[in-house]
Length: 302
Image (tube, rainbow, N blue to C red; front, side, top):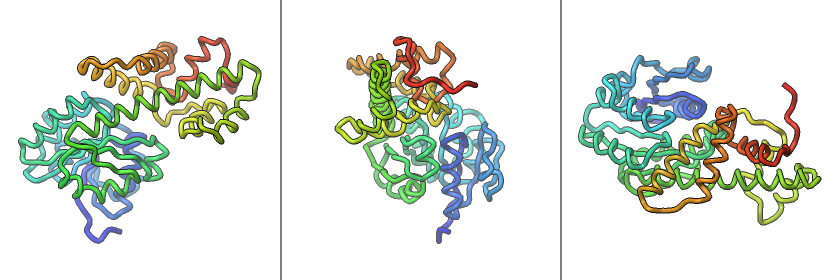
């Protein structure tokens, strides 16, 4: 129990948001929540106050966290008639932990600042596992003084917490993260498909590679998913597609070529075109398997 409970709002209680909000509740803070998702048992059975709108959350909380899927969702939560902005009063703080457009984020921050309130963009990496374990990586953009004030709350949800720069820089960092993750998933997928089609045991190949220079968190976690065929979503292909679209749109605006990112985005599109957009992003391997006419391992029968 924290010695100084805060009035905190949390909007968006999906796969990621629910455990993140749960950590704030466990620390003794008073939470006001709003979500389109069904309330998770730990939230529904806890001390959080369920509000009928984002505006109602902002009216009652001093700090409001947002964790929703995409840029238009954040815009609606912030600026709809019953959105956060309509319920804010001076000196409150909005913290967007969604993964969205860096360019739009800068505009959102200016609009919230104009109301006399502070704004941080603080996207996360670590997926459902990291959210539940409170071990998320949190990439923050915004004023240093605001970051230091909110840091104790970030520390309840994550471990690697970095102020990257000003508003929008947290989102830029997250886009960079998603580029690296996507390319690593594709590399692991190609390696395991190659090994399996060559007749080697992909599970043993993965174990051997984990002891060498090719070792990575992606090989460890998502390589295991590819071998065991466990593609229930921790982070959906559809959401990673959104992040790579942000990367490619940003690259066009900056005049930067991202050829490998474009390739990974196309592999995810192959999956989406075959009805797999709601699988975990480790299922990107299935696009490679389709082209090879060979699966790393057979899928378990339904």
